[in-house]
View 1 (cartoon, helix red, strand yellow):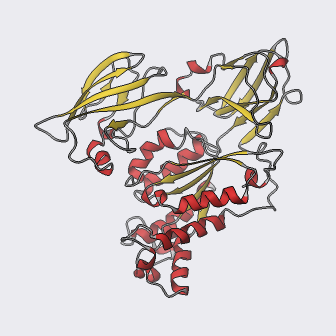
View 2: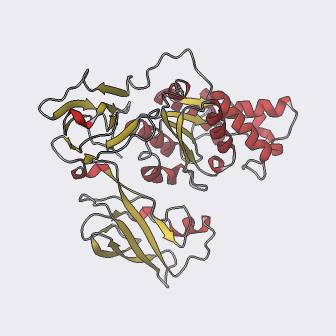
View 3: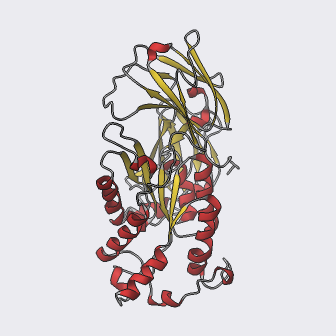
Length: 428
């Protein structure tokens, strides 16, 4: 909110906002929230995306967050999902470990008239108790918000108060048993918009605080013999540019080119062709450093078992890289692709995409994408009111790093900015 409220016509802060969840998050209310922010803060340079996957509960979303959430590295995450409370916490915890995002948690809206009399005393609620929704909304989610320092929109209580005030049955706001109709979308948007209010009393420097540190060139760091060095804490480093650079600048982090650090590469969603936005393989890993390329898997369904898939794999740079089965752990010949059996989700993903029955044969494609830059090439500053920023590393392992830039003062680099997530990684 500070980035938004302090944006001016002369200095337009870039703010990345991500809506993430499942079918409720896909509904039209999010567009009204995004539009409202753009109307209220017209000078902010907002990058707003909705990567929700309808039908994907927390048990699946905890896997797809690896491609959707953490690589996006939002400034603000607006989040709602149903499903396992254990995987819900894993998503929140990993967001705190891998990004510096502010997190806004939404409680569930009321879907039945009986919700008016549900148990709300957290001391009476437990995950093994008979009232799961009450446990999630009146104990678990408030505890998560407090534990991880998140905002909490208590939609459930406000929703019930709205229904009571206007003497409306719960179904008035729904088009089925859970999804919102036009009236429900209006109410949810209003509740979230009200939480994202201007906070003029907060004296926070968004560029220098407990999670973000900006080092100004000439004040905090200096060129020496054509080189600039900085030790920093964090998993992301941005370089801020001023006027047009006159020469390229080479980057080294911990003595290596960023491209040599395998953790700075990521995968996109593994999508079927034909198919939709739902990945048929929910998570892909690697054992040896990946290269930037596109992967294609040719998949065939076994006639004797409709839930068993065999496949061959090839990379656009690696070439043919092995074959496998969906019921066995697969490590490609190059070891650049690793797929666990539990991450196959073909029938469900294609059903959500409206493809049923599953085709006998289909392709699956994904790409390796860079979260790094080895050099900063000369570039024009297209909009002087918006910082020109190059992310040279995102997803660094560990906390302590050293960066060395080689190029000289004429490169017009004005600052380095390090992002340190509030929690240290604890592993998967």
